[in-house]
Length: 383
Image (tube, rainbow, N blue to C red):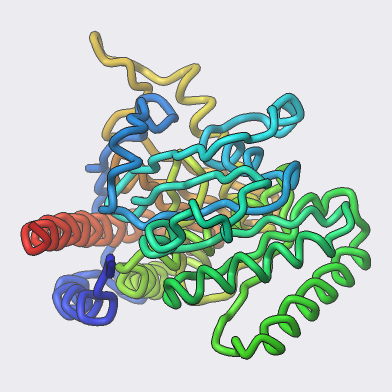
């Protein structure tokens, strides 16, 4: 099944918003417009709501991300830390997965997928296993390898799995997490990644599968590397990604911003960023800012009577660092937040930045609306 029509859809959206974004005021302009604070709200509770396993099992409306790997490689820990805000230390008490665990992730129009966590002992070559049904509806396959263990068996399982999946669905995105690297030195990390990459690529070449591309990431649940890696995976499943990147590029160009991230607040996955390279330290600062905003707002935020949320339409945050850098957070909608990094001299025209953010927020809102209409139309065609 085809989930998205990327190129055509992105072109339609970009044409529409090029005209809208012509209203955005350049940082070079002398006029300083007033501040616009009409924004949405953060999630009331930072989870994903109750799960209906039957609905998930029978739903093909969202792409699936399959978490695979040997037993005790860290698959369940990754899922719990990234999507359920579990402390990394608490994952030490998780039991081994002995059945397929399905998790429905539905935050916004851009973050829509299912995660299937598979037990390590599953055999995809078992005649009773229907690989056509599983891999045919798969958007991405994430294979987790324990970097602190002997990974030769894991490489054999990786080759067997991706070979079978690729034959069923060549459109799958294949991702390899070289996990638990927090216990390795920097040199050992690089050598391990190089060795795994070389062996996995050679196996595919020997099998005549040069067209099968594997992406490799060094990850750990004890730092932000797992969030950045999952951000890359999720972005490949977002059909609106070119449009979002284009909007962010226009925003930073006209506002004197150095770097901007569009975050999913619940998971701290960045759905999109501008075209400039991502610096890991900058990403970590933005993630920490989201944690600070959530914690302080839950403690000190004003709540209206009958409202359990600590956030309102005026929620935003400014953090000034000691190197003349400012972190600026604004809510985009219920689950998305824009986090910007800029110099304090450029922040003097805050009214201009707020006006441009208002234009950006309106564009995001309409992209969400078009996405919903597109999804509804696809369902009607399928029916």
